[in-house]
Image 1 (cartoon, one colour):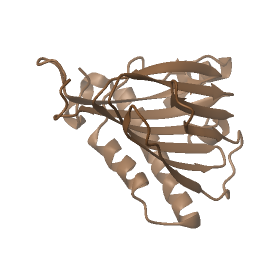
Image 2 (cartoon, helix red, strand yellow):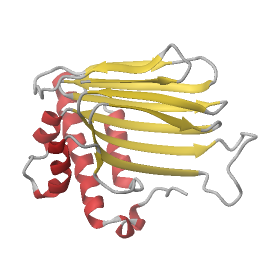
Image 3 (tube, one colour):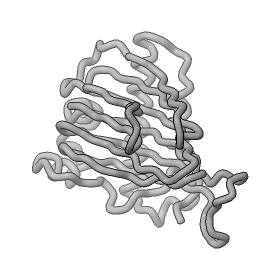
Amino acid sequence: MKIKSKIEGSDEWLFIEEISERYTANTPLSEKSVNIKSLPAQKLVNYQLSAGGLFLVHSTMQFSANVKVLSEVEGEAITSQFIFYGINPNAEKSADKGGRRQGSRHNIRYIPSIKGKYPMGADVEYKYFLLVLSKEYYFHLIDQHSLLHTEFVKEILKGKYTSFAAKDLPVTTEMKRVINDICECKRSGELKRMHTESRILELLMLQLEQMQAGAEEVDKYVISRMT
């Protein structure tokens, strides 16, 4: 499986990664950071982590003009994506008076080979936390026959693009805590791999728990809702 992404018109890749289809427990973690300094990017930093069947990217992005992010997946992937955004309070172009200045959302998706373009607004700071898992890795974490994701698995086996939740849901404080724990981990080697995998499982558990409860049941946990 290969996943790649860049800003439309740019020659620099935000990331381009070949991900093993196999879950390999003893694969050492590979880490790197990417800092792109080119217009119209005001801020563009990626932290990337990969292992057998896993790719993780944590990005902070802000642009001086509207752009489109080009993304492509070759092969099959299960993704867990978290998006946080906030309007720069010092920007001349700001949100409408009646609109929200910040928000968050997340979902779990099965993605067969696909290409897409995703618009990003000027003077908005975006933070992305993206997990890309091979099917084997995902089913290692959550058994294929588990009742937690029966309908989702049916669509995966059909090879059909699908989102676990019909609509993206707001990120909870517990999810944010786990994401911070993954990104700020100071361990190394196998201890860091074990820590990362345990937190990924916890994050998926929190997502499935919220999705089963329904969006109307989670207001008390919300960090900030979409407009």
